[in-house]
Image (cartoon, rainbow, N blue to C red; front, side, top):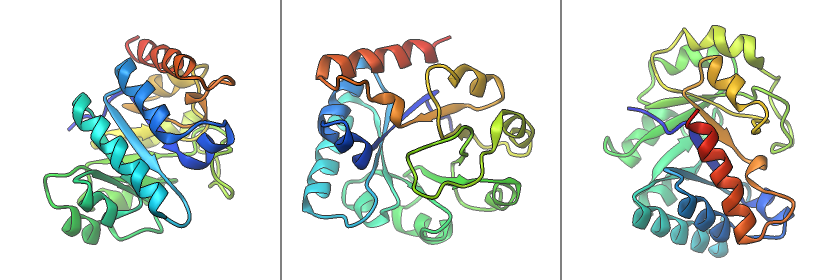
Amino acid sequence: MSVPKFYPIIDTLAVSRRGTDPVTVADALLSAGARIVQFRHKGHFDRNAFTAAAKISELCRDAGAQFVMNDRADIAMLLDADLHIGQDDLPPPAARRLVGRERRLGLSTHNQNQLAAAESEPIDYVALGPIFGTVSKDNPDPIVGLFELARLRSLTPKPVVAIGGVTRANAVAAWNAGADSVAVIGDLLPEDCSKDALRQRAEEWIELSRT
């Protein structure tokens, strides 16, 4: 399987800090042509979070794009979504049993040992990072860097998504180092988070991913 080169992640905390909402961001991404959207909500998954996830799932379905839930296998099952899990979430075999063989399953990795262990797991792709410094996590793992990305890329046949501090200024370097895709969080959001500005930023990313 393949993963789109541009992999936007809608992080509810980052979105809230910019004074917008997840559904508005998703709508802008999809209207610009994004082919995959991940919904990430850390902390208590309340009714408002579920409502936003359900609406984004519907928008993705209408656009023919992949919808990915972060962490929450139960919500992924309810919304018939793909799932992305981390090292501290459900073990991949358990997550696979829950979501079935038809849904895509991704796994976050942060170093060589985790990447090597992922080879025997029932997953479809791995995320590796943080490649660059990131502010999207309170306690990020050590920076992987481009040199290590290039070295580790050769150790797995699975698609590799570079994550962590990826911006329009460094995304090409990550692709050139071997990443099949780059996951983008903070750089999805311009200072002005109007719908037009959000869509323009998404269009810039999609254009960049075509190079």
